[in-house]
Length: 245
Image (cartoon, rainbow, N blue to C red; front, side, top):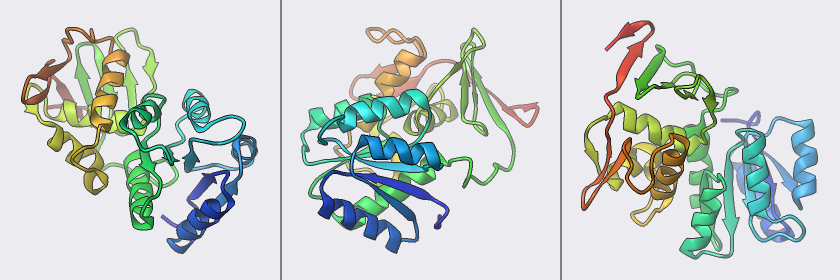
């Protein structure tokens, strides 16, 4: 990660905006300050943006609406930052596709840690190292290509995943028919950026079920094990560069 990694800081408070831009630049990132959604749109129209640090409470179009638009048009990772720290606000942010959520006031080191964690997880094409071999996982008519991060349904149509959703699904297909608790999933998908009260796993599991067409009332693919965690029920066929395992 270096100055070729462009992070857009979209924040209407000039002091916080300048603080975050300075923090990112000191870590070696290229950071662009955007006062509102319109400035962010103009930046994205001119440059490839690798991550958006997005304030929720902005005049005009708010961060939730901006995040929803970004998710609909592509896969730019989003770290939402807001003064509203209640659990429900975090869940709303994650439901519209944010990769992570950080309440104000925040510790500068935690902001940097979460930015780096998102960039590692999403592994954008510009910075991703090619995997040593291609891994393809097939289950219940679905196919997940770990190299291209592509999920294909039984009808042959691609299904878009956020960075967090992909990491979670990959962890599940790599450990099928096994009960996994939330701490394991948090560790595998979020690493050091996670905390024991992190609700991101629950939100992303709910979104994954919907995208896989899983019955949310009685899921058949990602099952909830009372008091234990979650179980990926289908048998998984794993293919490495053309050979089956």
